[in-house]
Image 1 (tube, rainbow, N blue to C red):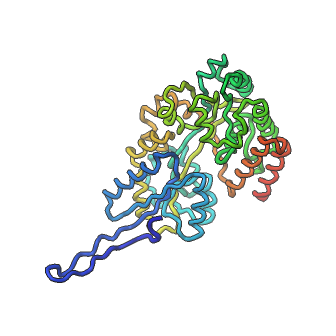
Image 2: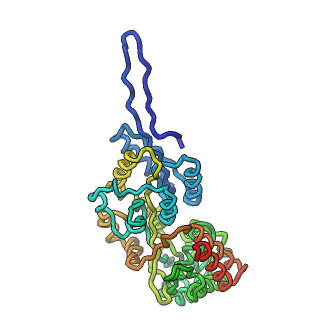
Image 3: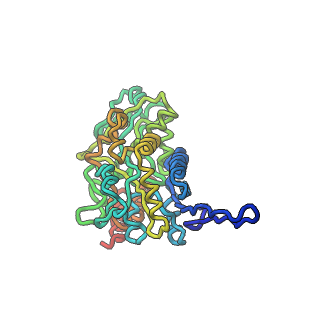
Length: 410
């Protein structure tokens, strides 16, 4: 970070001669803001907002540090342990409970006026409420959906699927096309577990059972994992999914090489910029007895040990103005978290956005539980082992459920 302190005061030396004295320069409060990197646009966008804020508030300096998502949690954890945490940060909402229970997160109820609170869509405020306190504000939101390459479907004589059986049959036809992969399956790094949850939920399974134990040993979970493994073994996915992260799969799709992927709205502006001639459709996830999509939010969190809370909150309120939220959501491809932006024609009339937003009534969120990242990592490693053939779906998921229950003390 640029500064290791919170407030700096520059004082001009006393002059002599014609300058009997020089007035002290304005005291400047420094706010350290750690930004999660969504795309190449993220850093420049927040710097633009910070510059506008500083022009209106010359007594406050906003220091922005952009950190990639795959290293963000470790970076924040290290900063907290070293006593150098930022004042505010974008975080994955799934981390919020751990930060709150450790006393790292600052409740914002006392800062949040009724007027400001009313600007948010209630659905996205919920994940930030822990033990009745608002521990952060939604800063980004998305839902997931299926995206199909219509040129490949048409060439294969396949119909876009509504069920998993239909996806399997369509994938066999598309895989027969030259230089084409039918189904893009990620198995590396961030959200490998999410790709499994899509399958699990639409087969009627759950991450956690009603009693809080892991749902990964359920029949639905085993059926879902077997389906992915079968598609890998039959060459219906790209080779070696564990070598492909989310962006790798998306790049294959943008190149016109993949028939079907599961994705989020952020991919839409990328396609329009990088592959404007790609013919695609946004559809609900295939079903096997249940409807589901993954609802995801990220959170703007203020740190409890910040020495610049008032200045930090002033910047937060500034950054949530409609003009900035509209630019952020449109630029990054998010669903809006504020009501005024959600009412814009783009979000109510655009068929791509509507395809993602349609799933919100049955969206599922990652459970807000302690040690979620550790639990998710167990799922990721288990799915990788299944994909590689190191364990059977039955043995791998039963072992994963036992490990998760141990983590949860159940």
